[in-house]
Length: 271
Image (tube, rainbow, N blue to C red; front, side, top):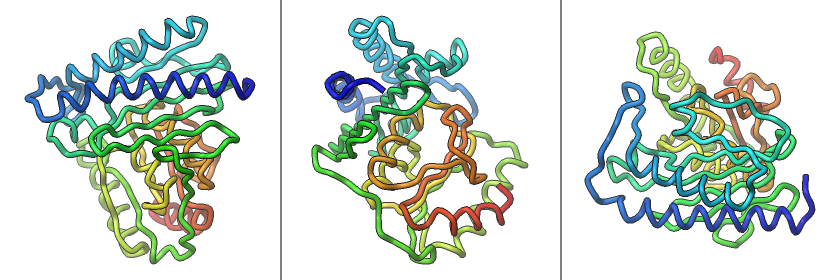
């Protein structure tokens, strides 16, 4: 996994990149954007591309032997297979639709896997000023203070985050909305932030109790959040109950108490 000093160096590099990209996101947040469509509702802006280029150039210069997976690069060339080599997995602007609409749930997500295991995670929302960080085995933090997942033990009192996804064919929308409709009878309430990475961090810091999403963009949405939740005492898993695979575009997460009960409800809703 790398020694402590080495991992600390990786984290410091990721934080520096996140803050540099965050300045770019914040500078352009209230400006008019040049928007392109990757799909019917899947958007990309010049800021997405510029932030990914900034991150890649900085990290490749420091770690030329490492591998890299980025959302915008993958949109053009396809997603590379995840190997055992140290791999930086970056979403330059998670919540691009929010960014376009000036809705302040926007972040850069930077994860580092070693041996395919999420090991370092940084998620930074420069609009709200929240920096989530974690190193595997060394705890999770928000703006430098330790965080932990919630202590909620009752599913009926839990706050759930979910997302509709980017597909708009009738079958997918019907399945998704029917599942959410069923889950609304099992939890206290539902939130949709528009950012998978920030939903995961919300579970990590205890402001959310559960989150799940099927069909998100790729590993860049979750690589950082997975280690942040795990280090905060939460659980990350596939919605089927299997071990999470960050390449699968399926994820669920909860605090340390609600996993099994929530899984039962997910399975009942035909995940």
